[in-house]
Length: 207
Image (cartoon, rainbow, N blue to C red):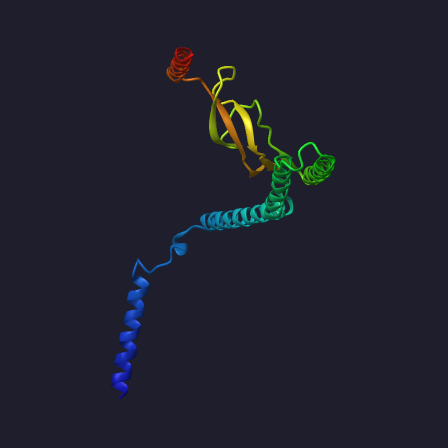
């Protein structure tokens, strides 16, 4: 038994010697000079500090965004109220029973006051209307819904605002839905003139 134990211990010690002699398992730090070790530690410390600094900046940005744009979704929903007020005014004005009546004028005036108050509240919270009419189409701010032939305007100029757009500070809350100008198609224009002349000629022949 003692011989077996001695043999086992002897073999274990041989394996330990082999492991120590194995260059693959030898720590690189043992081969480094003290100056190199210090440099390596300084490098690790610098990288750790940079990572902490990046995390701090990300946290600060998230905190600022939460403060500045925390009401972004609520503000976007509030715009629906302004749209509904505008639709209500148009519906009332198109009602034949109310046209030119005092009741219509008073109601529209009240709706205008409410709408102006809502826009004023939005401005106080850094929400501004996007300028559209007579502006060049900006894909970052405007969404073109249709084109209108107009030789008096440069192509791509906004000539009609279908729905107001808004900015919340430097972020787009909602784009403006607009109609933009385009050059009159001469072929279509000539075709229309020919059709008109034919209609006029047929009417004169009938007379």
